[in-house]
Length: 242
Image 1 (spheres, rainbow, N blue to C red):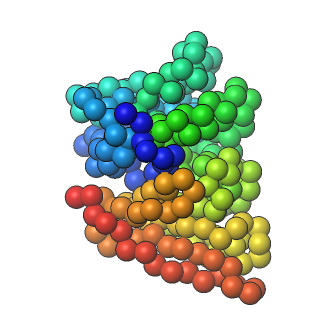
Image 2: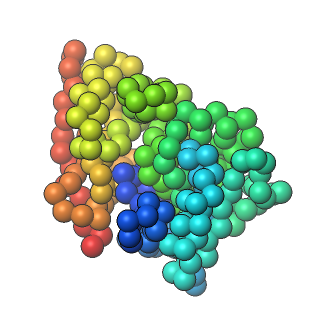
């Protein structure tokens, strides 16, 4: 069964590390949460999109290891060519589509080039739960801050825009993220929006924020809005998933 309304889970969370290897992964509780939102019965079908990370083969191995058992994993890739003939049909057959982190600028360009933006929008409207971390969070929004262009954070303003807000990820992880996000909202470069500390996810039903969740303590989400020539930040306490 599909979700009862279009649903996006936009986060600064995702997989857990099981060991020291960066791709020794386990599925964090946000995956069960997204599957529950989808209304899935049986073993939920979860498709991973690693476009933002360049369809890294080692990452894909880790993703399959993490998801197998609790979920029915699959993936879609673009490097060096699409791995599935019917991308639209594959996306529509999923319960959850999860988008990994990396370069949101490259992700947006490639999805648009190959028409994946249209396929994903159709899947969202059909009740497939869309989710993701970092680039996989920003992409659904109008824009946010990104290191896609180099180590200095810059704004990206050409997101898919299905969620008519800005999005700040990893809000507590680097000191420049908070003031830059607030400054871009204050000067009108980005619209009012939401930001997430590491460990936090935003759930949108339709285009409205419905719930904030977290997989760890001492973290939060934030509503950031323009107020004259400055920005005002409001803390939103999450519901713990574990």
